[in-house]
Image (cartoon, rainbow, N blue to C red; front, top):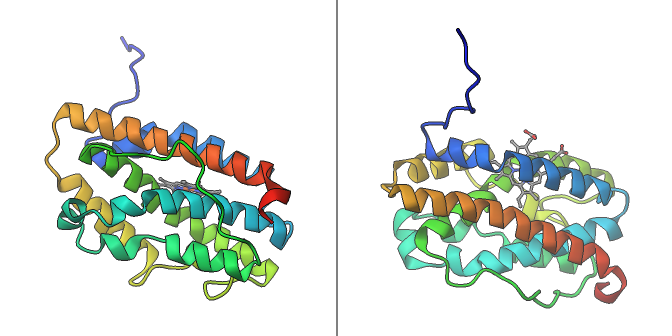
Length: 202
Ligand code: HEM
């Protein structure tokens, strides 16, 4: 006899985070595409506004000594500066922060947010190829989508290896998973804001 069972929980933390963010990722991917970011530099600039705001909100985590103790290269992984330079390349002002940014997360929550930010570098491999059609690259306008030093796959492998090896309580794991979902919700909010305030930010 066979019984229907819920999908098994993956054994690795990074895989579990992948599982719980699968649906929000698909929704966000669809939303990004619905805004046609590669139809013009102006539309791409709106996407960069969202990326910049997201990265700027996460900057305190990338600079947090306690997190750097776990991930020694964390500070170099942040892309707020690249996104800011991209905005300048694209002739955009640095946008004002949007209320509702992450504030004072627990370490477990911080891990969930950083997981999403680091994971977004994987999709960036596809996005930067599309940006090339707008004559943008990792040295002009699409710097924040560029390949990290040492390679995209290797950077992700190193990050997840460390993440997976951390000792967390079941409660902390749950907090990290909720935080990863919250990170997708926040990016979605920032993306909607960036495209809604088109004229005001240009
Ligand atoms: C703010 C967070 C994120 C954003 C805005 C984002 C955006 C996107 C977009 C728009 C694509 C589609 C690229 C294309 O088809 O042209 C994509 C693909 C992809 N993303 Fe993300 N992503 C995010 C987070 C993540 C995370 C956390 C992971 C992994 C843990 C991830 C892994 C991937 C992978 C592997 C692809 C390649 C195609 C696929 O498997 O769907 N992304 N992403």
